[in-house]
Length: 150
Image (cartoon, rainbow, N blue to C red):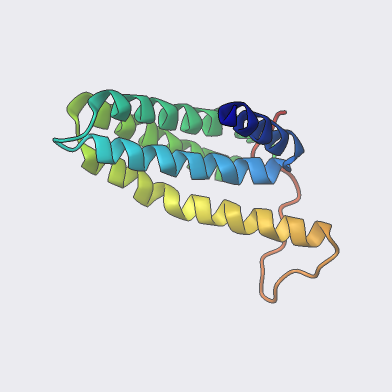
C-alpha cells in the first residue's frame, strides 16, 4: 500500500516538475548512486548493490552526454562531453577493479557541474517568476545547452 502511494507521488512529481528541476534531480540521483556504489565497494559491502548503483550512475551520465546540444554552445558542449566521457571511463574502471577511488574522482569532477546547473536552474526560475537576477549574476544563455526531452 505505501509503495503504491510513493510511486504515485513520484509520478506526479516528475510530470509536474520543470525540466530544470528534473535536471537537478538527475544530478541528485547521480550522486546518490555514486555514494551507494562507493560504500558497497568496501570489503564489507554488497558487490551486487555496488554494481547496480554504478550502472545507474553510468546511465545518468550517458543521458547527460546524449542530451548535449552543441548547436547552441559548441565549445561548452565539447568540454562537457570530455568530462562526461572521463566520468564514464572512471565508473567502468571502478566497476571492473573494485576501486572506490575512481568514484571519488567522478564526484570531484561532477560537483562543480552539479552546482553550476543548480544555480542556473534557480536563476531561470527567479527570472521566470519576474524576480530580478542576483547582483553580479551572469546573463542567462541565449539557448539551451542540453536538450531536455519529456
